[in-house]
Image 1: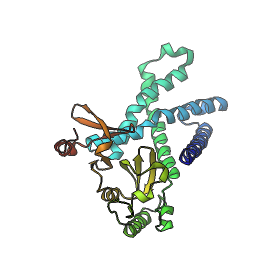
Image 2 (image 1 turned 90 degrees about the vertical axis):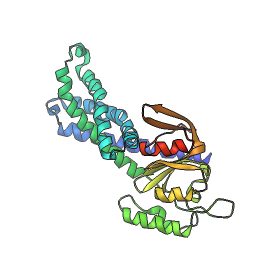
Image 3 (image 1 turned 30 degrees about the vertical axis):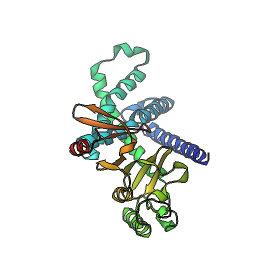
Image 4 (image 1 turned 60 degrees about the horizontal axis):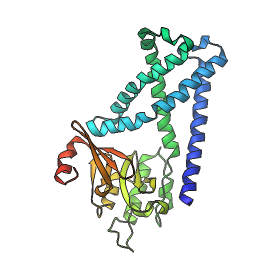
Length: 286
């Protein structure tokens, strides 16, 4: 019950932060009037930019997940795959924006107008993408280790070296050992009790890892390599460079051509790096 209340409070805080952040961006763009919108009346600029920014935020939110999946499947750099995903997502958004601007004259839309609008949508898309990373950094609240140095949970994203050093000190203080009762585990001891310790998946997020269980997920100050070492007692594999999966957590495997995706029991989908496919197949994953 307490975990549900904390999740609800966190969701409300994130929603308020998103709305305030997008409202500030909308007001700024309305005042500056870029892309020729300065000629419009101020009230009209606010309405148009509110539609573009808030609508773009909704449409471009899946871009990060899509870029991560593309990077995992193809092995391409994450920056490149995020850019590709943003460029692709800009196509349908361009059509929606053009329809909004055309209003009742939508039947007269031409490809030339869409082509002229597309670069503007791409710029807004990359702006929304940047805002998502700002939001993720602001909302990251690492969980301190039980009985470990409390300062480890206070490390900031802006100080990566300090974060890594703090994580290393905590790892030394609580070495990863098989969980049999009294023994401590550097990773499992940091997971909030409401989530349990049945780890399904661990994803790397900058200097943190997001740990998924059957009851939710938590962002922890931890290196992925150390998390994998702490889960040595669990049958699993690092299916690509940024994600470890427990074998028992896989409910089914989706295949599209040469690409494999693991669908977990909690609904999460994890792309498999092509370099890992042969080894996983030999291990009986699919």
